[in-house]
Image 1 (cartoon, one colour):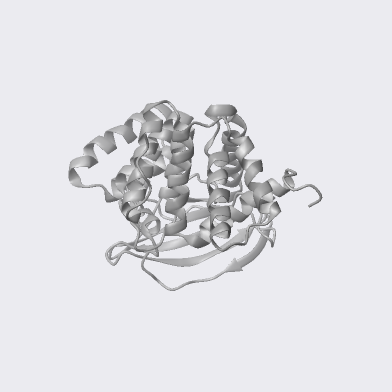
Image 2 (image 1 turned 60 degrees about the vertical axis):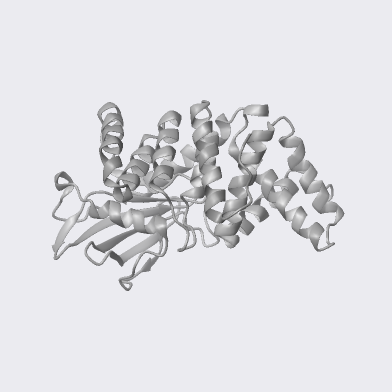
Length: 326
């Protein structure tokens, strides 16, 4: 049985991570990836992201054939792993690179809320600083039509700070929508940003270049969205379904529970909950508990992100006809 989700945030995170590891061992990498992508997403600065979570997500990505994602997670794990784990992690990374080829551009995650791709090529600027390029791809265009951004950064590897040097936002067709200029050097805002900076600062001498290469955000956008679409489309039905339906059920269940505690549950709220219940009625109790654990962890770590996910799930149910006439 899955562990209970009460206790400290660290306990809940650990429970979710254990469930994900069990899912990998049981041959359910998509389920594991769905849980672990929540755990390694940008979180409150007081909440840690453990190297083991990166490692397990890398293993799930390998099983799903997402080699660039796996390479990114292994590199993130290597950036913060204790010395006694570095050799084993390096061996796992070397094994997939030997089989699949070098991944010179890697994402920080392939989760549903977007992916930041880091070009591992770097330009030495002296005194422990280097320049590099990165692109952030969105799962869908934003209100202004932007689909991705591409930018150049400077990393101060001694002070562990990064600085935006300049970049732009682009539409999915590659049209430049707006530019942005130089920012202030700053410490990472959360553990994922910290791990990403440390990953960049573990510079490979073989990837040193004279000039920061232009990063092809449009190609990365197409890759990211195709991978997300493939994972959604390939999720089997019934008891083997993907993490999205289970997560939405858990989000809506939490939402209705909050309304019930306030005495404000309306008929449409129950209909939305029932709509998700029907879509997950064949799920095992363990799978539902895993989703609840991950959703609870997200709600405690990042209430804003949890509300956004929750609202998206409600909207999906409404669009699917959960409440006739709406």
